Image (cartoon, rainbow, N blue to C red; front, top):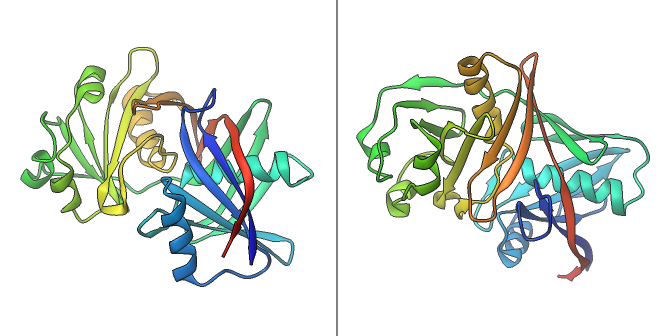
Length: 261
């Protein structure tokens, strides 16, 4: 069996930045879960997206090298980029059905814009096992549907923070977001998820469904700019709209080809 596949740098202004994702185009049916997981493991990027077109409706699923996840921003952005630029999709708006409900990618000049549901965020007491994951202490701790979010005092802490990956792996969550107010953007963040097979994710679109509601309340505005301070780095434009989060970024194709299974 041959499967068409692309690798795309998402939330990237140039190649070799942002977050790489693989996009596998299937037909009308999913492959076996075990096979999709093996393909994602073989690809060995943060996320591999699988897309089917069933009854003229796109469906999407996402796999890290180790697990299937319920939501992934950068691989959805990459999928939209592939359909718009390589698969002759007509129009400027693509809708996907997913485990997290209906998602969309909109072409907006040189940017692509995701539309995701807002995360439910709850402030929790400081927890020793969370604080022990890092060499600096947060000022606030929150729990979303799948991730913890730790808020720090300044951007330098986020840029220089050291993570104990073994301790993060023991936390019952998809991963941990660390964030602070930015100097040149509204807020900065990093995302650690060794328990999901990703030591540090370069740019995490889905984490901004948690970050944007928090910083919207702190800064008092709906339009926000963000930077993820991983080694590869990434820039995002975000907007809060009636319980939904718009997340915009650029994408570039790195490779295209076929896998044979």
